[in-house]
Image 1 (cartoon, helix red, strand yellow):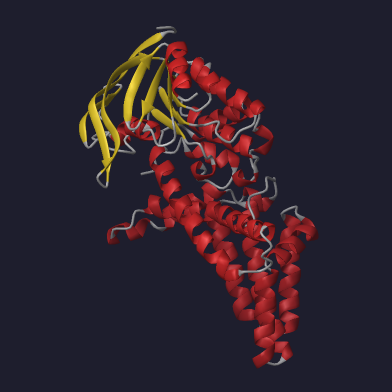
Image 2 (image 1 turned 45 degrees about the vertical axis):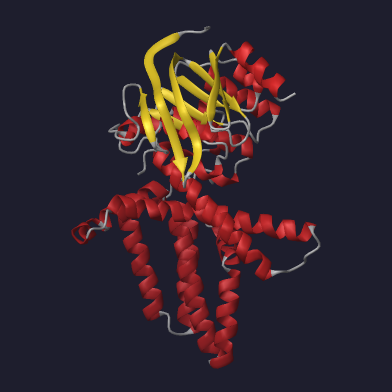
Amino acid sequence: MISLYRPGSSALHRMRAGLKILLFAAAALAIGVLATNPVAVGIAGLAVVAAYLVAGFGVTELVRQVLAARWVIVVMAVTQLVFLPAAVAATNTGRVTLVIVLAGLLTLTTRVPDMIDVVEWAARPLRRFGVDPASLSLVFAITITAIPVIAGFAAEIREAQRARGVLLAPHALVVPLLVMSLRYADDLGEAMVARGAD
Amino acid sequence: MNGPTISSEIVLDSASVEFDGRRALHDVTVRLDQRRIGVIGSNGSGKSTFARLLNGLVVATSGRVAVHGIDPARDGKKLRRDVGFVFSSPDAQIIMPTVAEDVAFSLRGSGLARDEVRERVSSVLAEFSLAEHADAPAHSLSGGQKQLLALAAILVKRPALIIADEPTASLDASNTKRIAAHLLDREHQLVLITHDMRLAARCDIVLWFDDARLVAVGEPATVIGDYERAHA
């Protein structure tokens, strides 16, 4: 499941969402540009561990975030190892992993409405191109909400397949998942209108 | 008819709804000012279309509809500020990721100060026994808790009218009782679409739909009795 806000009183929790997003974006950029070898990735890793400790989460939460992204990390590591030297593959995979867990820390310490406010504020210049900032921020919120719902549909379908003796049938997963997701989108649209979000 | 009446009226005058040439509601004329209005009927009889007609989610193909003096087709947005809609499946009603955020979403654009929003959200969550789940992902709640959340998110707006479309359809007895208490024992006007005759019996008036037509309106005991005999 996508990581969500955990209440706390750390400096990261108290920081204004806009400033925090800027800081995290700068940190991600710094990791991308400066962490060009395994030692530098290790140093950046220590900084990320420190950020988790400052936020009051500890290493357990950091490990949980890494485990949540394990398939992205594995696929990236394996594909790079095929074409690149081990040290380069480890550096690249390490950088991506650090950025993923940093993004996790951002959502763990920032309430979604605060992030939505930032998205809405940042999207204001797009108004002149006909983009409604409020709608854009709502799309952002709904995307976060919908991920666990659609993952739940997939789990439901897999369970039904197992109950009928089908062990693994990806092709039989896609069609019902698409139908359930479209129906969900339909119902959600109707509920949004009913709740005054039209 | 039993129960208190309020000045707010729901009026349908020869209202019909068609979808792709199929008649979903046919020539419904009724005037309602009771506080608790029950709606019963078989699946596909027109109950849900009737419910959606009242807040402008569905527009009448012909005839006239007025809810609290507002035409839902013309001023749907204005009407929906004061009308809450509870669906049978709470999953699609949850818009924001966490419980407190979803309740607070209902108050966006209300003009209330942040502190007041926080206070109203906390108060309604406590009332619905959801306070300890305030920061939990909304979709991690049980089915009963999700329906309580859906209702809390409606009631935090303090609407004058709530339309509930089979809100207890997938709930156990204990959660049905809790949802029913929140819906039936408050001051708002309620239009309750239900297959649960015990809930319908607690309303002040009951409407029976069959094959897209309103076939009976009246005292709950009489209408429910006729309905049950017709389906015995």
